[in-house]
Each structure stands twice: as structure tokens, then as C-alpha cells.
Length: 178
Image (cartoon, rainbow, N blue to C red):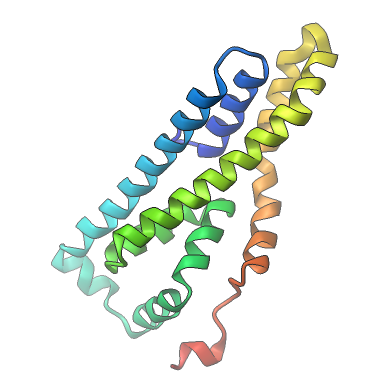
């Protein structure tokens, strides 16, 4: 499931832990391993694509390589911000593999991002989710669906804020010409 929606799996696993249906260490470890394997697979797909001559020629434009240089200068913050910004992992991780950014650095940053994100989600669910679900009594599974939907939507609002906080801004005109 983490290949379809990492956020849904993270929230769902935290909900299972909050209801004592799954142990915290197992759930936390399983979610993080699934996220890291999926992210590594995207990097690998990008690296494989780079071996294809036709694809390299399609991508080999001045604008793309200017963007590559911009990303290289901010790789750590960009990879970390990507964890918190829905819709950015696929292109960022494919590009990381395609451009041959160091896999060990990629793996280290994405692991840190995964641990931070899942730790945050698990903490929020375990602190606020359990009392909320318990208060709903027999309606707790409807509450779980609502929490799961919030888990899918909230990152869309938090992601840009996190990106600004860690210093990943838009590519400026001055940066494009360097």
C-alpha cells in the first residue's frame, strides 16, 4: 500500500497502534522500511532511465541542466522538504537517480525525512487520535476514516510551510542564468 499512498499507510498504521491492534515498534519500522524501499525504487528507476540514450537526449536541454545545478546546490534541503510536500517525491527522486546524485546521501536524507514524518504522524495520532476515537465509541471507525482523510489532505498545507522553513524556495531568475 505504501506505493499507492505513504501518508495513508502511515496514518492507518498509527491508528492501528492507537487501538492496540498493532505494536508500535513493528508498525513504525514497517512503515519506514516500506517508505525507504519505495523511495529507493524511484531513485533506481531514474538511474535506469539515465542509461537509455533516447531518454537522455530528450532530457538533455540547457534548462534541465540549469535546474540540475540549482538542485545540486540545495540537494539536502530539497530531499528533506520533498518528504513533507505531496506530489514532489516522484519527480524529485526520479531526477535524483537520473542525474546520479550520490545514492548514499540520498538514502541518508530520505531516511531522516521518513523518520521525522512518520514520527510526527504517529505522535499526533497517538496523542490526539486515541482519545478522539475512544470518545466516538461505536462510531470510532467513522472517526478513523475522517482522521485518515485528514492525513491525506493536511500534508498539502504543511508541505509548503516546511519547505520555506528549511530554505527551499523557488528557482530565481538569477539562479537560472548561472
